[in-house]
Image (cartoon, rainbow, N blue to C red; front, top):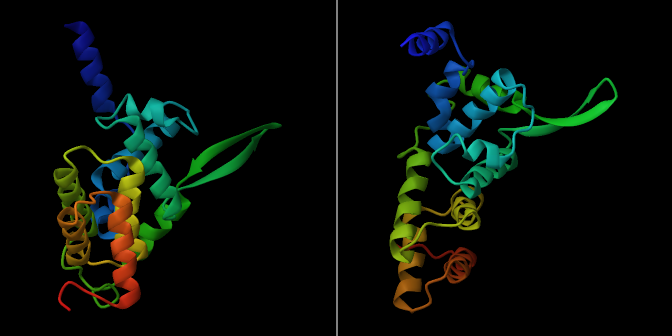
Length: 200
């Protein structure tokens, strides 16, 4: 009983600092919940565990997603400019650490933007991605790989594909009996080149 009281007391004294703006604005930034939790765990590793560059394996032991999803989340956060890895020289000992400056800059910029500056999306990007992920997992009858998650994100973010275009390409692949991500990607690329949308 004393041990429990001690733990409760420690919990009440504080923990890792998580920027309130991150919790308020992550959906508008297009971050998924698991990506935000990766950021939270990275902040805790830095401030609570004194770990500047925790491994995906270490992070996965503290999260409810597999190491492959943690790695995919980190890769996307770095690729999209939310995180960076910088070299540090601590008294002649060279190492690496995560830098959150770009994330904080994005949060600051979004916090001062007015409704006229940012057009309200029809649906939050994070929810759009979840819907598409779920649809593909349903059709493929299995969880998606990190590479497949990245491919879908690329269709949405890089190529600007609409949900209906991606879903139409998936249906085309199903009907043709060629259910593979490579085939869906080929269909989308052909349609984008030809200016085809599901409505035309």
